[in-house]
Length: 273
Ligand SMILES: Nc1ncnc2c1ncn2[C@@H]1O[C@H](COP(=O)(O)OP(=O)(O)OP(=O)(O)O)[C@@H](O)[C@H]1O
Ligand SMILES: Cc1ncc(CO)c(N)n1
Image (cartoon, rainbow, N blue to C red; front, side):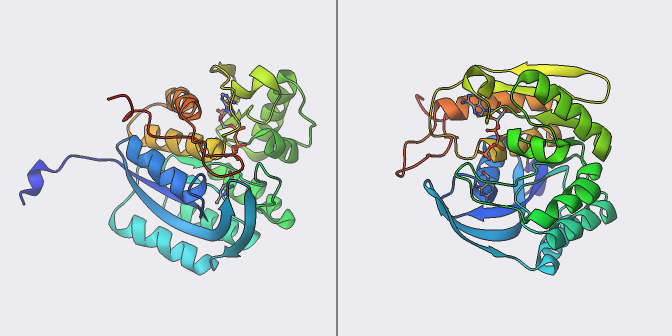
């Protein structure tokens, strides 16, 4: 084959856990990458047994195997951006932070995954310190949800003003370039509202609230879409706005599968054709 005709496709890396139900984690990330026309690569940090009802088991991948996956991808293929999702424990976080630094991985989006929607703990209690001190400072963007923003800022969050205050504290405490506090865990129409803080400007990013119980994977999908948009050349605020639109569409076309909270649906570009 004449490789000169190969399209130039950006490459993105996800460092995250596997979700057997296919709605979140690595599975959501790779699907999101494909629908953004970027080539997805992965470093799996843990394997979860989960479905739409919740998480029933989790097994960690040894940190050196996580590192080997990151190196295998970066040494040969190279990436234009990366995201982290479920990292599970402090050893994996420290190893990932070291590789991000050593390999100078660009455009890092950190989704500081801590607890599933169904209340299952996805990060050890003693791992928050490493997330805050080692990994988040290396990110272009950190995307805590309501619960994660409360843990990272120490503030209870019940209003938009609380989300704004938390974003500023997280920015100050970690030195991350930009904080996006997500509103999916808030009440009513605030569920479609996120707060952006870059150290100078606060922006309130609003998309229409979608009334559905099938919201599994919104956070993973958002951070994966942001990383994909960055790899395609969008600036950060544009990447976030485009990703929010994608998530809103995915919520509108979410899948009523399983007996619990179904996943967001990525097939909207292919439907009604
Ligand atoms: N019902 C909704 N309608 C519109 N947008 C929503 C809704 N729920 C969540 N979002 C949006 O989805 C994105 C992810 O936010 P959310 O707070 O749900 O993340 P998360 O809790 O990390 O997700 P996950 O359930 O995957 O852990 C945000 O941009 C948020 O505004
Ligand atoms: C593997 C995995 N990553 C992230 C989340 C958060 O939605 C989840 N439930 N499972």
